[in-house]
Length: 485
Image (tube, rainbow, N blue to C red; front, side, top):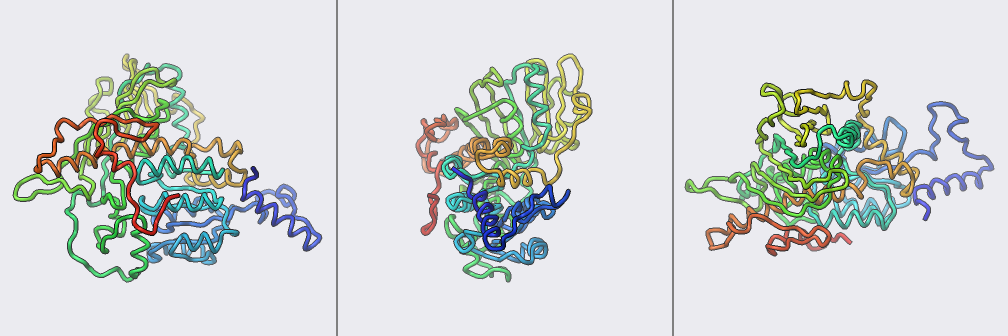
């Protein structure tokens, strides 16, 4: 099946030939640095402020491609994109944009709040548009599985916005494991200083006025698939991350960056079980309360994985957030920071011969061997070149031009075939957290949660097998008027 964006460019070329009697000169004939209009990708942004501004700009790649449309419910947040691309058409509803411009868009960047990722991506893929979706890929596990299957069905080029997956350091770490430098890995410790936004608040009950840049229709579009709540500054802008209605908390924000190196290096797949505990949300009459609507201020999650071909050992992964980090492993010197200079985020893979660490995005990988030797990037590869800032988005845009079955697409570091299962693992942690908070909040009513802390997961069938009430978090209920497929 021919890629649709390629067919569109061929149609443009053929039409030009028929109409004018001239032909479009190939890029190499026109000279170095010249890009023929027919070689440019037409890209639209769904979510054009904040992270969306850098996503669309990096895919634009200094004029290598065209930006033809910008869609956002709050245009005041998009000033940088609007100024950068003044000729791009403007929309607030991505469904209207896709319908009106279906023949003029080749690819879409999606950088909305988490709860809108899946519907925007699926609608785009169903129209044959290639998609770049910010992390986490989706809000729940069912959505991640559905997008992974949808990408194959509609044969579109995909990439998730965990840019560290394109960091060449990850290949170096894979090579270190393959050479047996740290032996077999049985434990992984991952941590983050997030959240750096409010989490642990009670649900707001007051009803302040909408911000001037949005009206009631805009707010309804912001709510999208989520259950309706009145506007509150604790939700928008940015603070939506701390509410399950819209966001996925610290795990969703940083898990796809920090879990990614271990997931890739060790070749992990579906976890088999998950267990967690969370920090109390707020105090009421000097009693700890758990608010099941909001993400907790801190959490600790344990995931277990079976042995893989890359690492012939079962793996237990420990995740902590809210500024809680692991203790120093035996082979890392006491005065040495963990993973990053300030130890605020990081990954530690514990092997039988040594310890491998890295920071956010797979940066600064190191090995500490049992015999006291240390291996760092310069020693491993003196010719190492870091990824350009825009490389993750730009490589996706180039792959869009060559199509679903191309070598370029297969070489992408985070296409949905990889980022879908990675996201499922990340969101599995949130399933456990939400289940735990639900059990805690109902404990006063005689709900037996103490014997149900460990959840057993059937990955292929997307089902918790030992506590059915947890399965409500596998697939969320969309608000009326919205659907995924």
